[in-house]
Length: 506
Image (cartoon, rainbow, N blue to C red):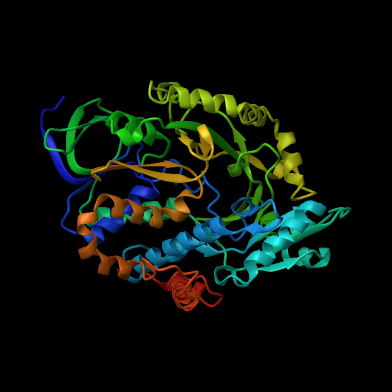
């Protein structure tokens, strides 16, 4: 082991969309700071951020039915939908700033317009969708959302899904054209390419094995080279743990009290993918249905147009499954080694509560391809097995913690920042909506961990995110102005693709 200690101002663990976003923001706010990145894989964005490991929906609550719930009085709670939508608007603002500053490539490389739709069948779900549409349609953030229960209109919107369909029950859909498909892998790689140009030290094939506090309050990392086995020590005043499923183990090794009592529940995912041009050409939308009873929220079935490297394909899924790995390229011992004395009771309580969920996930793993094709035929009645291949997606690790509302061992769906009281270290845990809200989440990290700099940084943050500190919902005129600007800059308007395609990096 080398006794030399390399010092940085900031260390980012994991080269995914979260570290890419935080690194890009900090480089704008504090350009003189020395930033070092450690990634165990050979390139950036190989785990959850990779374009083939997620659906790239650009989560903005335009189609995700699980972000709106029906209350006991029959009304629709849209609060989470509004929150997620506002967070995606923040992401678009920051991406627009980077494009305008010539800091990332042509926006068309990572974001394209694709309509977002919700699709339901049966009296109960059609009634729910109609009420959901009524609750959202007059909201400034959801302007332009259309509803139809007319099969002829649906045949115009989703011809592939309506072809050969026997309509023997009520059927309905909502559609909004302002949805997007986001290639988070391409965005992540673009952000890291820019950080490298700005002298950020990005070290691949580096496994962070330990992290501990030093006498002066800094953090010391023990880092192993995956190829040579050589071990080095690196220190920093601030550490961000953005290693996806790998974050929980490192948070535990830090020993901070805020990380006690937290566990993780891994969920794997599979998609069916179609690259047959004749079929792909018949569908252009991201269409979300309702999750099956007992299924976790991340298992909401959806049929997605994907645009990756300018090639369109269709993804259907996800089919959830269970594996003890916390990362796609992780270890079968990840789950068992995450159980510690301080979270044992929480994990046991969660296990007892979630036996039906675990059973469901194991059944999903055991499904044959033909069984999965049956699920796909709920969306595409005439789907043929030979046109669809199975794709293993990324791992998601849901947070398990004790909460006032859910009691001991409550499974959390969403993302959460865990940070030390002094702000010297922060970890991001959880899953969807994840990447889509990366900018909002990283603003939260900056606020929590660098309060002493916020006054000086605020003008620059407002330049990067014009709506910073303001509710877009409560300021519809500002939303209209910002939305028009980001739509133009990111090439998301009907007349913008040619302009966007001509945009080049300086």
